[in-house]
Length: 119
Image 1 (cartoon, rainbow, N blue to C red):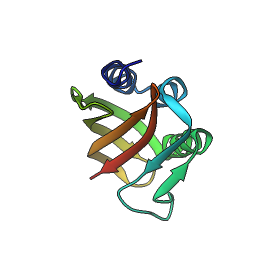
Image 2: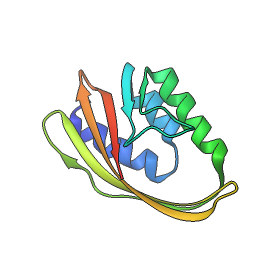
Image 3: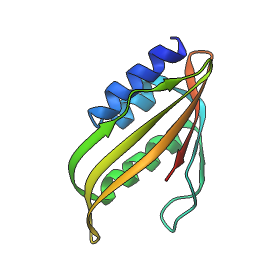
């Protein structure tokens, strides 16, 4: 797949809330995920597809209810792309909140090899 095809497919799956499906379909086995900063619940850097999937499952377990998800059109370069994602969620024990992230992805050999999130 080209970078544009990967970007469009990732946006399609994420807009549906199918993050794990996007990861399994589009990510390299040795992909890296980098958060804006470490938290008590999450390390700043997660290595490997299985670790990334587990991180996503942990995040999902912390969500009480999803109210909405919006994903921008991708801005695509030769081997990278960026999107914004807005999530409207109620977190367990924390209430409802809206979160917007800038998400930057790097692609190599037809797979996402890294993702990085900025708040």
